[in-house]
Length: 326
Ligand SMILES: [Mn+2]
Image 1 (cartoon, rainbow, N blue to C red):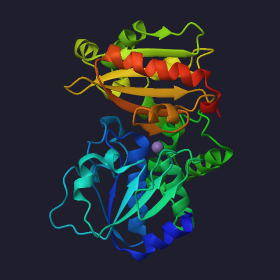
Image 2: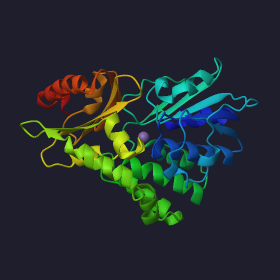
Image 3: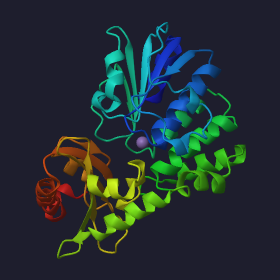
Image 4: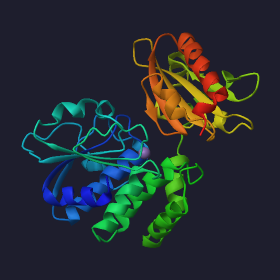
């Protein structure tokens, strides 16, 4: 579906509910906030409702204070815009608030998106949901002001790994150049989002790196974050985010995997990063997860050592299987 149909859909309605995925990062947060700013400028009413709280380091982005965790009693809406989420399970308990007659507008850049909406604008070539919302500002010919630009920049910067992942295009750079011209300070944004880690999170990184292993051919590197390690270091779950990049950055590594114990049951989140040869969206798909060809994840029930065994087996197949290589 093209942006024109989404634009037409947005034009048709006046009251919107806006949401994104659980455990939101800057793309989920920034794309929602920018979307709401856009809708307000179009004279529409929009309320943001998320399953999870806004991570503290993203709370400097104006508009995030309006993200609600509970559905306002007196709010009725005609359409719900869901950003950066490949399926309805990803929005968590917000899915319980979707009225039967509400129109779902699905705006996403995950290749694993299952087109769950009435309107589905899915662009796997886009760096981020933020970049898609930027295009909507352009489509509506709405001027981007500094608050919009900060939200959009945060979304694009983080989803491209600060403009170094393979989803970074010349267009991405043109977009952020414009955002910088509007007044965004790249140095300040980077400092606020990346250089505010706690000593606890850094200690966790040290613990996790101790667990790193590589396959004999050096193509797969993986590490663990256990509940025990989280308890010992008092690190936040958010603090686990960047750890996988240390495995990914090793020369010769094609797939990096981070196994994280989550919740109270035997449940392990496996995150995957690929340097581009192996499609880790497909790999995560084998375990009911998904994402992007170079960044994906899934949740597997079982003890961490058993999950590691199962996942590694498939990862090894993926590294050697030409059909999983694009
Ligand atoms: Mn995203």
